Image (tube, rainbow, N blue to C red; front, side, top):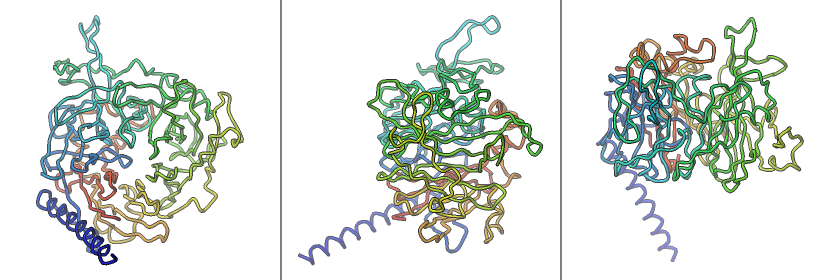
Length: 547
């Protein structure tokens, strides 16, 4: 009996090794194998996009890989073509075929058209701008009105259907999406939302085309969103979209969040990152307040303060009451102390993909000190119980404030963090990319090759770090995307945030962020990088196995 068990185990192991070897050999014969630029680095890296354009996958908190793992969805930015329409591209990782399946006017320079997947390979989800109706105006006659919408596209049948709201992040099971108001994100940070201009042919819901005045710059609007976010809008906030029906509803408004956080009502409040917990019971929601200041050391007249809250999501609750929520942390990259607030700097909060816990990681530190502290917050569900809460506000919501000073050193799991921390489901290993501004923090050979950043695998239990590969993200002088965008996409850089439309801010919006992202089975990573010769972003994949 023991011999039979041993034989079965060896057979399974041999089969897994053979399957992996076959997969890697197929990729090597189909895609361009990339030198990882250091002798000890991980070698199984491939560039899967062609050099004839600028390609990016969405973000580090969703997978560009389809549920089966066969396809990968990306956005091709329109910097190399005479169009304002981005292309939605699907790459068959088995055959190498690169398919343009749709176009979109609802894109931005960092997250593209929010391309991601639903529950199946026939549910490719992204955003677009459609003509909802036409109205009479004295100046232009019959003028189209536009609205941003989410799209569910079946690439096998060539069919698309529209969602009532644009999509930011699809839930892990693919049945829901959570979204801020994507047409307002650019007021606090450019490159992430929908700020498109309708100056070329735009596909309507009837799949016809309309030729519009190239000099006409209508606002992309929706009846759901008012333009005044002072003190927090009552019709803007956290939206939930049902992927099957397309229905969109406001789960909690910014006005209620402002009341919950007891924010100063004289300043504008906008929503930003929106992220589902792995079990879909909670939503991490980042809101940003634009505060007018008069500090001699600050050049900007408006500064941005971010507040992260966690919102409880109960799909069975149809009461319309304000959901339970609690504050996680506040931070600002522009100030450390102002108006009786002591705020540290921070970035990139994200759920650890562990179905058995509710933990959030993020970088916390001071931008004047090299490296970040990688901090993990353990979200205790008892925070949502009134009897365990030490406070509540005027609308009855529970206030459960985590220690924002991170005085408990056990929260800090790694002292040399960078970029977008991406945890493995084991909660122990984390993948760290790095931004271009963080390159000087490293003291090894990376500095001898300007423009490259390391992709590190870190064991947070032992502190051991390993460089998987070095990725070229470019230098300012070879940001070819930014140069080609000049004179073409100025409308993307208008903002309520003072000095946001400056030359440096525009150039930064075209930066190459690596944004490492897992496949559904956590065996592969996708990431962005910049081609050294042409200066355009490309998408790469790296085989991680069992980590």
